[in-house]
Image (cartoon, rainbow, N blue to C red):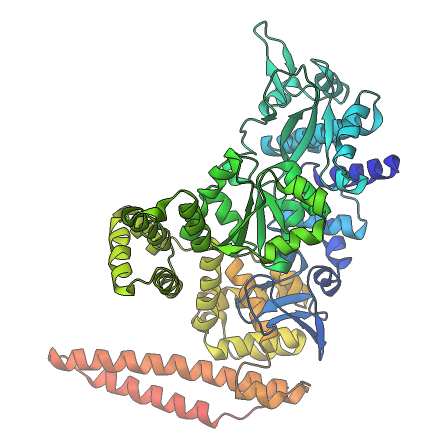
Length: 640
């Protein structure tokens, strides 16, 4: 059994934590060819077949009606709601919040394709990648200490006494640091790792005589992963009585680890968080692991630190709902509870679960089981009820002054909420709860909202979350592109060999008014002149800007939603109808350019008249434009 989970852990760690290197284009093409987009996306969300394509609920924004479409023929995805789109690599990047190289590695691992890396590639990797590599080495070494050494048996029994299964230990990569002062140093030297690299990530420290010693000695190890599953730090718990350091010691901050921006367990929990649309936040490593093992997998831990704005922003990528579970006797949990106002300021909704006296999530789950913990979550309360209960326990409601202070405290938290509608409902709830006039509470609310520093107000107005900014950008992009330009490019993507000579024999890229559709047209012509064909997937890889990629995906999926010409085509596009659609769009494009020219000419003619200049040239030019417009109206489709 132990050997089995050693093997699984080595595969997972080795494949994930090798340095990013330049991957040859032929290898990228191989990975893309082996990664059917429907198969890849189906492992992450439920898709249903609709005609030639597949439809599902978009994983990138909240929706009740499916608008996320996947095309097996084009090997592309597109959401009609938030306007994200692209190929299979782009999907993995968006879904896993990964870099381009990391997305390729994920797909390669899934397809069983090896990405060759050499010693030279390791040396060429940048410093950040070397740090990831060293942390990966340490994770494997600590895991081997736990599962393959005699000394590690004591640590293994410690985990087993906490009822952690082999699978759980593998999932979280738990390990053990040997008691020797240079055990990890010696192991690193065997693998050719420079002690300086270990020092950079806090795995060793320097002695006064210039030598080094292991930072973590004789402790059970909890690797801390980033959202992409790469080890960035360690938490280490004491298990020996003669260990005089604190109960927990953690990695110091490094270029790849900033504790205020990390949540323990998020890498393992993110899919479950998306699926259940809320996250459970606890305090410690063991709390999280016990609850996760018991079945509640949408769980992260603050690791004893006060909740930060950066951590809340990190959570907001996956859900807008947080449930705090805390032990009333825990100082660390009290710090976590002070994060309630930060959560509200961050635009998220928060509920609270208070455990029975002398219980923490770990002990509660081991005594009562996972179902009992889920029942506790169902009985969570709003921050209003929680704070009211805290004020009650503190005796605030024993006097009129205390009551006023308690209600003022509730209103102060409500003031943190940016959504005015939500704010008004909470004000109504407090008014009904304490038999007060809403107008009185609004007066108090105004005091707190006025106290917000001017700097913060400006930030609140201008700092839109990155994901929302990107969505808004995509929406503007789609609405800005003229319909006829979309129709022309859609015809090109439908049948490049027929449409490119026909369309670009009648219009030129400079005829397009939108800069992105103009750029894509130029690229299409360039590729076609060179190869004699145009593939949408290949075209996307040649575009560097996300807006351009999104536009191609949008047009590819929108071809039956563009306009009347495409509505007439229906589900099956015949060659004649495709020509008709393209021809109609070409006429519209030409007419709009002439109408713009006509409007400019009339303004110039008016200015000439007002200044006493000769208007005859402008009258002649106007007549020429009107004649050309009439000619365009009379044009008939002729192929060949």
